[in-house]
Image (cartoon, rainbow, N blue to C red; front, side):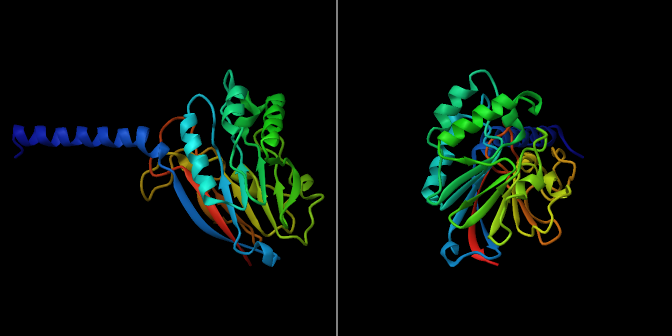
Length: 279
């Protein structure tokens, strides 16, 4: 039988455990960045690109919730990696009054790759209800001025690697056929597409390479060994990490850097470093 002292000790332990977990979830993990290293085998990769690094950053959510100092620390980490290519997979901002002054301040010196820097937009980059096209256009222009080649249903060749950038799904800009219309199928190619659900839509044709996505934040909070309870995607299989999605295609979902709500548990912010190799 449990006596009063034992009961109070157990209750105090539970309260302390909850407080520690809550503090870690709110003030610890959201700012504890993981650097994840992965290999990226690419078909037809030229020898000049073998061993080169591509850093993926996603979901920075510069705005009123994510501290500018934290973004600055992440940028310093990326610069120290000395990447050859940097790829941004959307949700640069969480809009609020004064966001463009903040964008100019934070993204004025964003990390760039030695060979090139590319990016696509996410749903939050389109303002309220993902429908404010002028917000996205102004943001895209500012990011371009800062040295990022922004892609929306278009492609670009970066140091011999073709990058196809998709328009944002929730903003009704996604058009995979248009994105590949002028792409060269003989070139080594990767795709940037903010929302993982896009891989399940028709129109990908014979493409059989990598697709880099974000959007999910890895669920932000998840119990160990269990799926996240909340994911902003139709296909609940897509939370974080690598997926085989059929037809030879592989998708990698980055957990993102920022957040809409300042909590994370078992889903640390992520900088992904891919080392390119010939498939």
